[in-house]
Image 1 (tube, protein in one colour):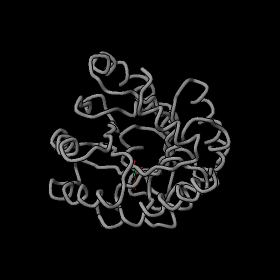
Image 2 (spheres, helix red, strand yellow):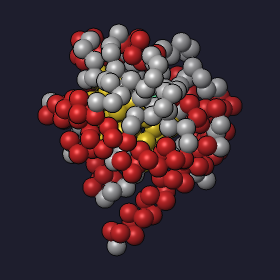
Image 3 (cartoon, rainbow, N blue to C red):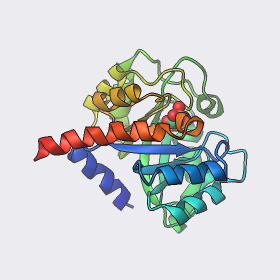
Image 4 (cartoon, rainbow, N blue to C red):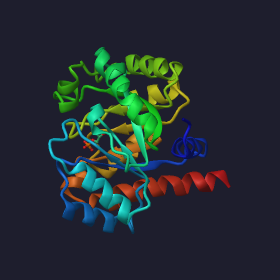
Length: 256
Ligand code: 1GP
């Protein structure tokens, strides 16, 4: 199922335009926090909401998605860690295959369980090669998935992994240092992966300053994902959104 969401992402990439995704973890965001963010998003544009987390211990996910859909036109993409986290209210799903790991459950197992449900839903499917990178401490994602993340200082392994993912037909590559990473994925690794693939590149984990956002975009990220820092300080949305907009203003000027 090729999707308008995916087409939108590819078009952005062709035109050198960058995008900002805000990750909302239902375990960490209450209704008031979500309303505050929705208010801020009216002046500081967000391109995508990603919704999910490694555990999802609460039952808030459905209510959170409902609130987003009622009050915003920003597309909502599920970022699931498990087939139980599907929700047909969202617009689409990052169908993650954890290609940095060697756990069949997260490469194909969960997908088999989810397949008939996805078929029945109207969710747009974005097949995504998901790559966890070691950024200084074990993340929930790597613990829960029982996988070893990619070594931080081996951009060539990351590049070959991304290349293989693209050759297998995955339509996005997501390089993730994990939520609340001590430091983000290195710009050397982002650059190496960018050069290895044609499909859009999503980068997240530990992007908690405007400089880190800028560095990831300059190195070749098409989409940056920010979670923790916006949960802690919603006003950070203004800073990071300005970085993305400034980037797009420059690339629009070059294009004309
Ligand atoms: C994690 O890429 C996301 O999967 C976002 O990470 O919460 O550190 O911004 P942060």
